[in-house]
Image 1 (tube, one colour):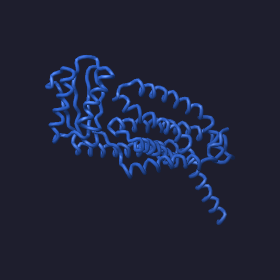
Image 2 (cartoon, rainbow, N blue to C red):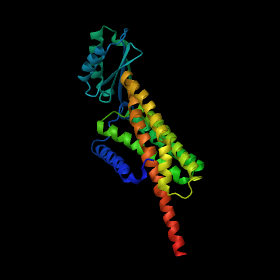
Image 3 (tube, rainbow, N blue to C red):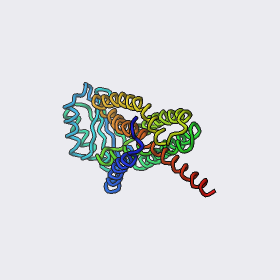
Image 4 (cartoon, helix red, strand yellow):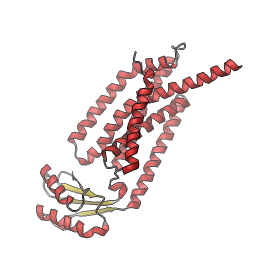
Length: 298
């Protein structure tokens, strides 16, 4: 039997350390918002032939002359997309010169470029909707788990879920990875994945409570975690292998979705075992202690 609960302080300290460092970076430098949130310009051109890796690098080099944050990716095999939060409508000369340089190099008509500008107001609206989505998901999960198990389980599950969000945000803040709409989609996916793992553990705890009536909550949790550990690890690893392969093989737009999924899946597997269950045990022990005090004073 694994002794998970007795090392609760270690698990909590490890998570708090990562989150504290990430929040420190966030406060000092802020998040590196992508075009979806910060606003900017998206340029797209069809080169009329399959785009090679060296061509992407050459276009990125050209684009960096006009925007130091330019991101270049491929789309539909023959298309190239340039994204930059630096370029905006009031920098039309730079945009046109960038189009001309790329068009001349690859002998394409400059008129075939498509240009899309994302304003800061749209970015702020996306931020608000992202926060609203997170709170809505948290509330729905809390209600569901509370009804299926108990309120303590629901609160523990939501805290573990928020732990995953903060860990992912911390990694993005520390590594200065752009936060865009793909990140939000990945976060909501991670929330669903994490809560599923947590529910499996709580379900096993509920089953064991029927046959292990005279044991402590620590032992009950350790036995339940030991019984579900292989399932949690196997599920997490199989999913992680797939997403990691997608990240290394996929195109840029797919990598933007895969990276937060990788971080979130690792964090979700960790939080289900080392965060949610210990919180539940601490709360149950606190209630038990209060009841014992009441009985002693009666």
